[in-house]
Image 1 (cartoon, helix red, strand yellow):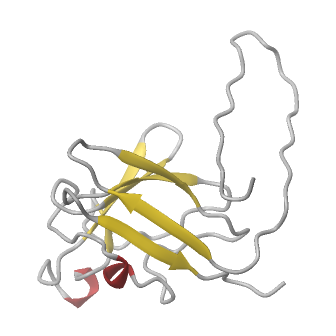
Image 2: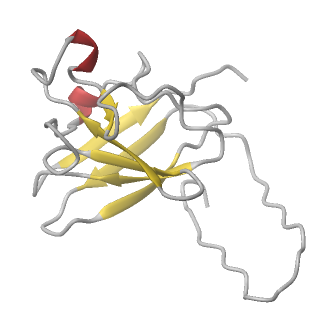
Length: 146
């Protein structure tokens, strides 16, 4: 079913075995919706296109989609990406956060700078929506032509 994710768990001691997942290359745009709740909920998101995702790319209008801005990952929306040993965490900065390169963009929590590399092909992320009763609703354009 398009747009449906799954969890895959291998039993401990199952041994090494190659597992292949396949499907159709998505066409058209992709709608993303991440609601907030009164608990610190996370939405698992997977970028469906076979290309990396630049969080601050020119085709993504986070403000129009309803991102909550702030001064860190506690009061703004946050994205967490597994790096193999922990999470790279990004927050969406307020319009008066710092210099022009730091305002209204995703910033790395550790450096307060824009991410130096995109989210790689095949990597998912967790999206934490701040602001009780708010929802991020965004249409991600197909970044290539088939």
